[in-house]
Image 1 (spheres, rainbow, N blue to C red):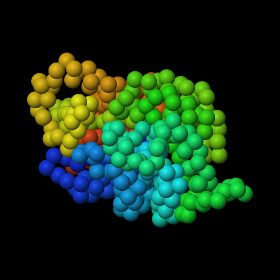
Image 2 (tube, rainbow, N blue to C red):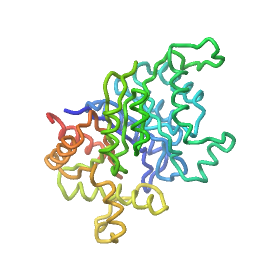
Image 3 (spheres, rainbow, N blue to C red):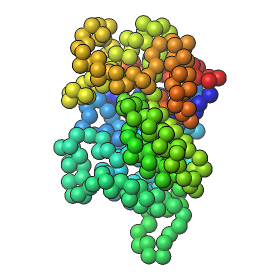
Length: 330
């Protein structure tokens, strides 16, 4: 069985609010911990009325405080938005509070639009091309070695060795993860086009490090599972509506399921939805098992990080149960 983990966008659903979303995230993490999932990541997004995890490290603390054993972390922190020292202090603090359970996934995109990106770092003159240097700087703050000329120490953070993960949807992230000897998480759940090339590049160029002896590939994977095919398809319409709204520049709360969703799709909509279908499974236990098996045979992923954008909280918990059952024995 592949390692199974959770990527939660902390969705603010139509008819709900951020409080509901954050409490649902904590409840889902508790549920997935009992089920047997390995890690639980939340993602940094800004200026998104349908996502409650903008203050990612705070959300991680909220979730970690309500769980006992599941790893909790970021999928990811968008490093261009932050000074590496501040990230080291935040995650050093999390590690001090919840030792041995904190992950730090890092991305180089701003996680938002250009105007909001400017608002986030209006005084920093940040450059995404600085990302590799920022990762190395951050790694230094979290390590055990203090260079003689180093005048700044992350407290908490120094010596915590919080494990780093490189996130990406292109060859850039794959190559950086390989050079630094870090696990690589590819965003195949929404941008699978370069997935196979990125995996091949990462595995070919991987250099062992103190953190990791051999390549570790984590792939984002959409699952919408239910007792019947019809129910799963209906539940999936919420996430697909949200994806189309985002691509069309009108993000908002996660919509309710729409039984007439397919009838309303335009040819352009169909083309957009093809972007996510290669890394998606929708249906019952048997259907999900077959789709996941094909994906694993094709990618040889070490870990799947499962995304379930479902409007109803109980249905989302059930989808994660079915996904875990479907992958048992694979």
